[in-house]
Amino acid sequence: MSQVDGSYDCVTKSPMGDQKSVFTVKSDGGSFTGQNAGAMGSLDVENGKVDGNKLTWTMNMKVPMPMTLECEATIDGDALTGTIKAGAFGSMAMTGTRQG
Image (cartoon, rainbow, N blue to C red; front, side):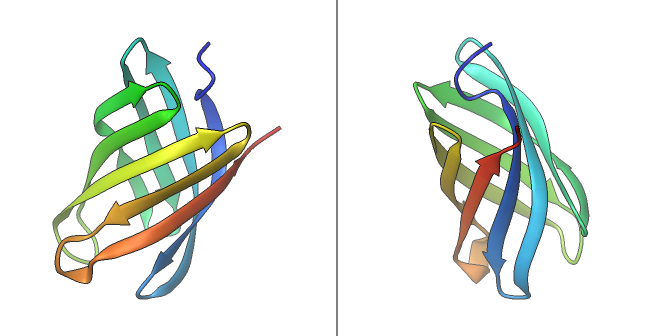
């Protein structure tokens, strides 16, 4: 198991207010799979890449509008800090804590 693997309780600062979700990471060498599940539904990780403690991935959002989200995060111990780029809406901060 990699140092980045696990489930994280996350909050994304979106234009619609704070969005809570559970972000799961399952790494396999230099790549990872998982999903970000919240009140707006669940988005699968696509093109997940692991470089040390840094993650990059995309997610295809369908609701409220179709959009590809470009994401990156750094795992430091049990803390996740990252950003989600949402096209014309710009970047949203994402923070999380690994579930015990």
